Amino acid sequence: MNKLKILNDPIYGFITIPNSLIFDLIQHKYFQRLRRITQMGLSYLVYPGAHHTRFHHAIGCVHLMQKAVNILRFKGVTISEEEETGLYVAILLHDIGHGPFSHAMENSIANNVSHEEISLLFMERLNEEFNGSLTLAIKIFKGEYPRKFMYQLISGQLDMDRADYLKRDSFYTGVAEGNINSERLITMLNVVDDNLVVEEKGIYSVEKFIVARRLMYWQVYLHKTSLVAEQLLIRVLKRAKELFDDGNNLKASEPLLYFLKNKITIDDFDEKTLEIFSQLDDYDIISAMKHWQYHNDFVLSNLCEMIINRNLLKIKIKNKTIKVSSLKKHQVALMEEYKISEEEAKYFVFTGNISNQAYQLQTEGINILHKSGKIEDIVKASDQLNLKALSKPVTKFYICYPKDKL
Image 1: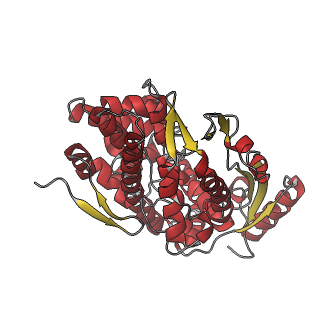
Image 2 (image 1 turned 60 degrees about the vertical axis):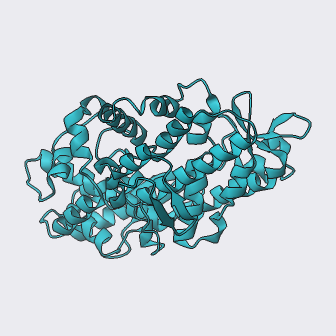
Image 3 (image 1 turned 60 degrees about the horizontal axis):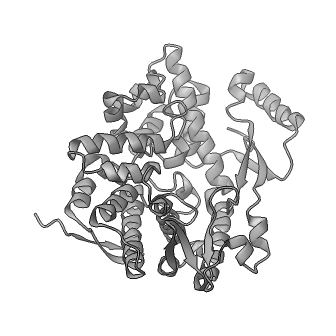
């Protein structure tokens, strides 16, 4: 078979698959599953175009990584063929552990197991299948490879993951504020003492990148409607688990039933559990909710109906913490209206907080390489005053409650 396929991407145009290992990994059922997992969870309830998948995103990341490798080699950075393949594999598989609806389900399906941990389990499993050809990629992914800039390309403040998702999410949502010039950013990359730096000429592109990230978080990722829909989805699974624990039977696909019936932690993620997890995607959750909206449990049926028909809770976002009295007021009203318990009312009336930090100063920052050879953090190098402000976390508080009738 001809494994040097070309894919047509709406953002970058033609993308070439760099080698046969990448082709075989893309063909694998674990990776094909990403076609059935939306990149932005339930954001399509706000932005109707946001139906793109993790599959799109991972392929886009490989394309940007190819550009980065070529640019760095052109500037005299030695990257062996083995390292090059390692970088492609690591970025291709960096999100393979995402569960249904991406971040919404992160801790709902398994107990406190992050998608990065599951990604690593998938990579180790694939490494066995591909006779150890992913060993270097796993080292880079875990940050154990001595050449630090390679890890920074996978997971840093200016990595290929962010360079793709900001551009892609802005394209599919139609939110122009997030449209960064990822090609220019990559062209400005260099390596000094095995650390990734951006040449001075690229300083404005980096400023735009940080500002775009802030705007995308407030306008898209933390949009109040996406937020309330995501919270409802988390509560659907929580309620389904409760009903199972009380001996109720629910209709759902076999993989979903397995995670509802069992309490799964990272220690329980053996080969069998990983295989079952690999069969889970958005469709399992949607089809389960289509059944459950007619269930006789007041909480489960109402939560599912809200998501299926986009008849969501009202949400208010404030700069100060929500008063307990206002939470109680809504809970009591709901309990009296529907003759339900306080525990049940808490599914429909709740508070929480969201925070946005566009740039993390404490962790490894984005370093600017001046013509003189001096290296300094973007916050110091930039004459844009608000970059320092953008490195402080901003926290907001929200309260959700029914509009009038459930």
